[in-house]
Amino acid sequence: MLQDNVFTGIIILSGIFYGSLTMGLAALLGSVSGTLVARVLKYKPSDINSGLYGFSAALVGVGIATFFKPYFVMWILIIAGSAMAAMIQHFFIKREIPVYTLPFVLISWLALYFAGLYYPDILVDVTPTSVNEVNNYDFALKSFGQVIFQDNLVSSACFIIAVFFSSPVAAVYGLAGAVLASFIAFHLSYPAMDINNGLYGFNVVLCAITFAGTSLKDGIWVLVATTCSFIVSLIMIHFGWMQLTFPFVLASMGTYYLKKAY
Image 1 (cartoon, rainbow, N blue to C red):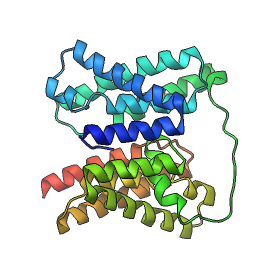
Image 2 (cartoon, one colour):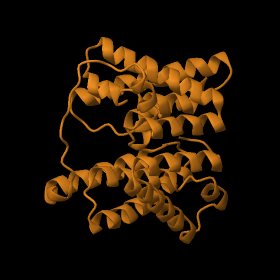
Image 3 (cartoon, rainbow, N blue to C red):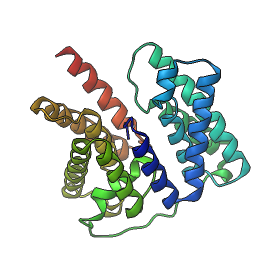
Image 4 (cartoon, rainbow, N blue to C red):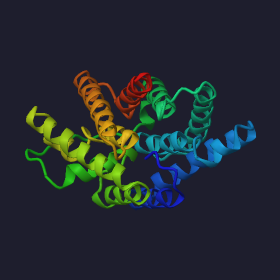
């Protein structure tokens, strides 16, 4: 959730454990693996202590636990994928290029591609469900939850509280972005089930949190980033591409450099 606050991290981790013990353990294993690799390779201590080598690694852990069956190989993939995510993160940190959660996206895409190609039996079978109405209470909360693959209201509420604890303005911006994105998706007649589960809002939430601030200019940059992210999400969903947090990464990188230029 892009917050450098230990208590925020504890609340978020608690929310993941509430949603799934396996995912909670996977998040811990991923974060520890990424951080250990950073320490062994002697990356900058201040970056390690800020969690810069653990957040994408933790997402790799939860992502693999979401898409892969809980076989022994899943835990091996988490360790290997998290280590690789930390090294990719370092590559960009050294060059001062803000790629946010791109390492997580790249590792997850690769893992899913090769598993689907050679070992489809280890992937989770997804059973589609459908509803016809949008629940006005669910989608706003679940947009926060889907940032870390959680679709239950308690975990989602934990994430909002966690962000609010660290940065109230970021939480408000994130919630507003989730509501707006979900309403637009509804009026564009996208599937109600996907809207309810926050699938159109979680990238917007991350963009809103990233550029949140108390000035009018901050609000403008939030609008730019969230709009771009939402458009990229719609394009990827239209073509059936797994978006993960790529729309957030692309929109935030573009907004970052645009903001820097001005």
